[in-house]
Length: 144
Image 1 (cartoon, rainbow, N blue to C red):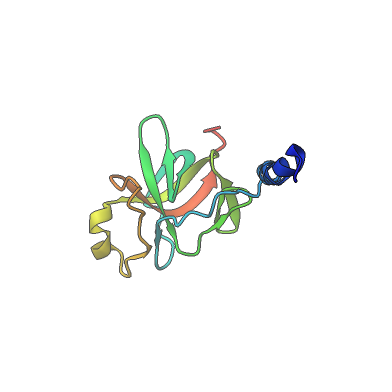
Image 2 (cartoon, helix red, strand yellow):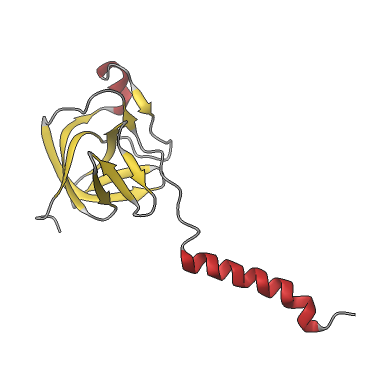
């Protein structure tokens, strides 16, 4: 016959393992499947500035007046450990203020504008009403 302590020891071990996993960060969020385009980096036709914000698979740049879904070149990457975009060898963590060169684009008409279309289409959860085709990115020290 098991004592009360023996009966509950398995539950206590499972609880302890769960707490340890949370404390050590083992439950880190998966990398987003962010919107990406084929081909060379888009030009620097215009400039937008704001804070990088992630909502699931959607990466936005937003300020007090506007919000754009970022479309990044397909060679951009994601650093899960830092929760950051890796763009041209630089890391841009979420929450940092950046300036991006490129241009606004209508998501619905992009297939005819982009020669090769989207490398990764936007998630259905993303707000595609305002999309920024990102050509370059730099920290915006004035925005911090």
